[in-house]
Image (cartoon, rainbow over all chains, first blue to last red; front, side):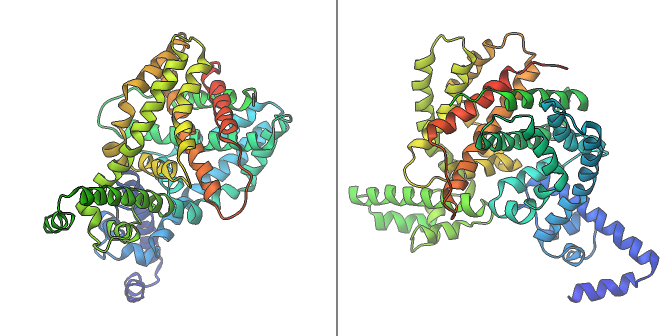
Length: 224
Length: 224
């Protein structure tokens, strides 16, 4: 609370001050996402994030965001809005389709198009992998993202393409697909961030490769 | 070092003492795996593990294992040996086969048969998911497990069933398959560990469902 008051005075409520505050928040979000992706969410303290963001006051994360969980949630929300916008556009493209591949493409591209549009190095997939893996964070931060209405609409249309598949098999394949998408994006980030020069496929080929594999996964005969 | 000397005296080198020491190590490994799976690897301290294992000396983890990384490695090694044994048996069964499904079954069952044979509640898949997601731990603890010669033999035989597939596509699908297996096992653990009574498929059906999906994933046409 002391930090909050102090900062409120220095930012003084002027337009310049609040612009500065927005810029600081953005800077902290970016630095935090990078540090978490590269070093691990739990290995990096709020103090380290504040310092790496060039904040003289090493309680800056606390002042601008609150707890670490609040900071994690802010990073997730920063990406949730553009991904939701992508979903809207993609849904408009395939409206009414009964082709499984169309709906899988829709699901995959909502993520890969978003990653593709991030400028510079990306960290969000590696960050998300950690959220999904941690039992506490997964519940607190991530579950509300998967409740998106547009996402549910896509999954519903995809299910309608597979009318004879038992519900539990379809649910299981949906989970498999989610992990495939997330982890392949994270692997790609790792490759691109590595020190060695590696050949990385274009975003289009990358997306097509995932869609190919998931069409196979989703349409495979159920033998049990 | 002080703890080590003290403990050496109390265990006194007698057969009873070393039996007690083996039992303590096993108790610590089990408790650590459970706490890490349920609460997250970084949220749980060595001291908490020592206490939960009923050790009066809360430096017990340090004495018996060393650092936290050493403890994590010991948990991985505890499972690596029986999984390797499974691989040996499964390889003997399908030797010489050129059927893709045989090799995928082999890969999947090396893990699912091991999980199936763990008695009581299981935590290892949820624990492994965290190791794989964390950039530091993945490098330190997990990579040497994937260098198993028998695993490489299976992957080689599987590749031979797909002679026309570009190398990079096959590698990517291999990674997808690895994530699918690991995360589906972790989801199953979560379901079984949850407080609600849920219907969970048998290990056989669970394994068949994963194999079905991965046969589809691996044999899907490459369209790019």
